[in-house]
Image (cartoon, rainbow, N blue to C red):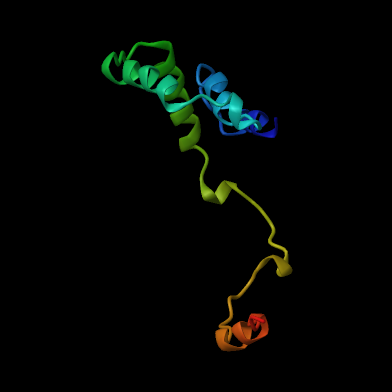
Length: 102
């Protein structure tokens, strides 16, 4: 699964990685459903503990994320990757696809 390796790049909290990996599973049948996720999210929301391991990991990722700015990111754009939209004459298109019923 390619997305799982990207979790290290974005510095996701360790405790969330298994859940994120399940949600991003290639096979939709293996992804958790809302009724499975709701109790977990509700627990996190109503039993918030600033000293929990999850919160500590989250705070660490926030600190790491603050040091990452757009100026740190470098990328090159290929000239053919840029597309400028154009207006099309829809009447000509519809004439091409107009088929008479026999």
